[in-house]
Amino acid sequence: MGLGAIARFQQNTVTGIADALQRDRTTITRMLDSLENKGLIDRTLNKEDRRITEVQVTEAGFGVEIAIRKASATIFPDLLEHLSAEDLRGALKTLEALSEAEAACIRRLENPNTILEEI
Image (tube, rainbow, N blue to C red; front, side, top):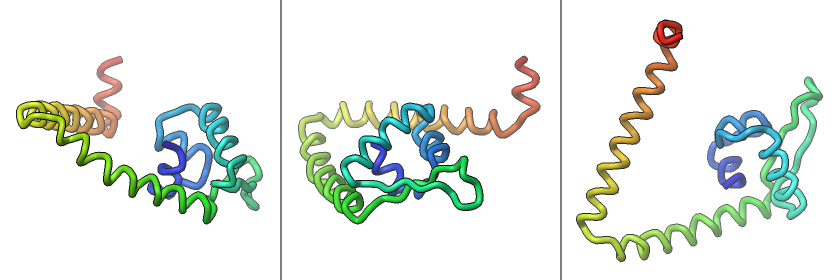
């Protein structure tokens, strides 16, 4: 979860990673502690603002991320084989509904007047 977010979303601060994963910073810090202990990331203090911790994926971390992606690419099609066409259509319909709901929420959040009207 976390290693992929750092590598894919190119987030390099604890706050940025927390926002991308929609988790609080203490949860992300614990996750980063584990990744750092395994040698998958490095953390450094920002030279201009020492309150900011920057996170970089190590070469070993990128290797693990690539291995995970390759494994996922082979596992996912196998999982789909066990679903009927009807199940897949139902899942697609649900995902489309979630996507529409997310878009509506984003539009609502982008318009501060809408939020103020609700208060």
